[in-house]
Length: 249
Image (tube, rainbow, N blue to C red; front, top):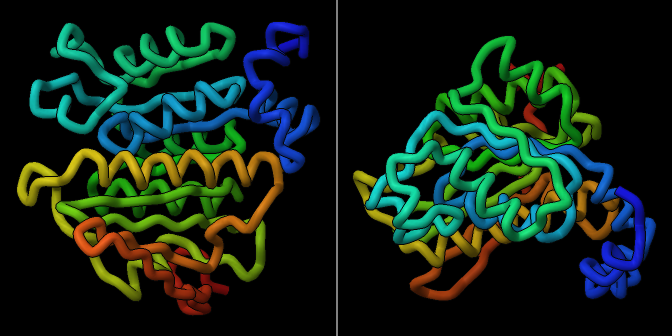
């Protein structure tokens, strides 16, 4: 996309930030990001990345919009119930920013298809809600050397971290799983506050932008935990496990 007057005006508030500037905005416009899962986490990620000007976005989710989704999945609407989530999110994103490219994958990625999709983008966002998917996405990202922004939320709590296997010191999600074990269960079993997944999803979008623009300190080697009831954040350091079955030496 050319940086004409309309583009400069659209992104002017970002370009004013010294960490972004015109050069950073050009990086965002040239970037490719894969969002896996268009639910409570993926919805705010998709909308904020679309608004920020990520040039090409890939959306993957096998599900359709359901009435129970609408309490938290803000990229969907009542009128789009039964529509594929990726198509619903694509429609919302294009309405917000018609200049970007939004591609859809109406299935759950796995095996070679997952690896191929991961290898074609600059950053992967894991916005899924189950452990097998998280572990598979992590393996593909480590294998391809693609940075991964991963998060989870349940009830009133959330967590987020960033993994970048291009960095020798970076752990992977498997290292985190070895420390914490499985993260909660599904929202349908435990419930979730919509604003909590919105908070964590917005943080994921910010981490993606930081990675693409090479600014700030991404959450590499750190995990942030959010307790909305106490309105508290805590952080733990996460080291790479040399015996990790995915990224270990």
